[in-house]
Image 1: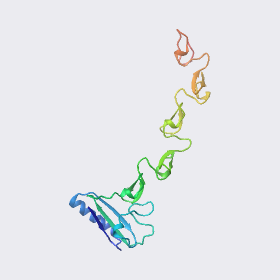
Image 2 (image 1 turned 60 degrees about the horizontal axis):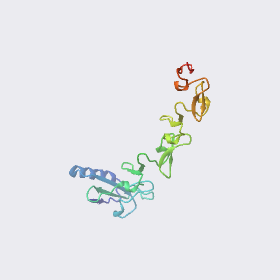
Image 3 (image 1 turned 180 degrees about the vertical axis):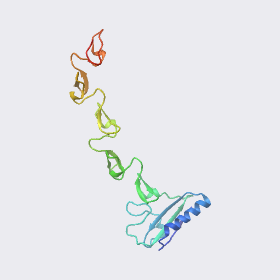
Length: 202
């Protein structure tokens, strides 16, 4: 069921709608969606149509103050989804009547974490340069730190010898024992074991 109420020149239109909505819910328990347009003599049938730039079911930028039309939509055979005024990745905030990004989407950088930026083509938050969102954004010998969102070295892996222990050297991004030292017993000859303090086979 669809009911359209036109209130022209009534500055208290929103309050009136709230009263009407309360009455409908109290009587029938039906779901109600309300779209309010402030417009200068617009056709009543167009009252539920979209709002201004970036808005959903709210005032057009060029509207004349005081001229109000209200569309009251009652859930039933022909419900109207106010999210339809927004992009598919957005939802309509029924309090502010502005389109907001859905979870995991963004409109601008303000919708993202400090380490991320909003990709305006995808409307998704992506890692800024020098940061990461997942391990697959790092080199194979690195992982993405959960708190830092920086690529960090995996255990026993390296970018250079300085990333390894004093008894090790960096070989193809792995810390390997220098000659005469050991990392594990496997680095020693049969019958010897690797001393994990001195890293010498004994």
